[in-house]
Length: 327
Image 1: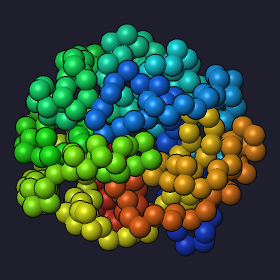
Image 2: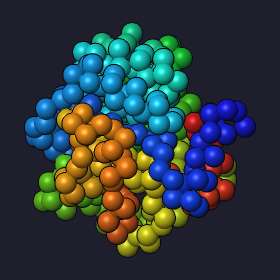
Image 3: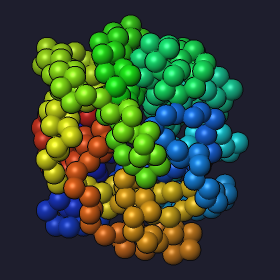
């Protein structure tokens, strides 16, 4: 166990058993602007003022002082920001791991800005006609090019696949693609979130039995030791219960939080705009984080937060899986 892992474990124990709050992992939407028009996301329609570079840096200083271990910059499309390289480099300078979640469209243009990033998560929804149909024309080609460039620059790449009625039968293709590329892929199901249109989501929901069949096939592959599935076995079993999830202990607002592009702080992305937020510029990040209420949702739909929740619950499966995926 290295120093970073020891510190994370120490704070995790303190949070789980003694109620101590430490923002170990932060998801940060640094912009709502996006150059794609995904069928299941209307984030680009949400107009919020963005923090400027110096404001971002000030918050990163606060996060470092509070023990943050990892920040995943998302959006919208985070690579739209001209200062994204400066943001990543400063995060690394403060001893915090930096990740980027991207649609891949701007990776070729911004490759020099993201060379120091610890992980690049790229959206990948299947064969070209399905991927482009769910996202935008040319995005499949851009994702392939982004993977190639990331490998050339020694950037760790992971894929993220959103399962809908359009690609529910393409999970095998997606997994084969991940194997060919030598990367891992996390599977999630399309769900309602604060940035989605209800009618669009309803039209994209997979048939329940088809979804369960797909998840069962992924569980079988995981049990065989398929190293290209990023979800843990516990996480896949959780998804099998969709749409009737069982609530598990939640880490939102305890060791994890979400920062919006205008600096508003929420327990997680699923609770954006549900509660009246504190703002990390107006109130300071510490006060904003400490003011967060306990999660009020019934269950979680996001694969990465499900994995975090299982780690928070000390699931050995999830812990070992995370150590392998994020090594």
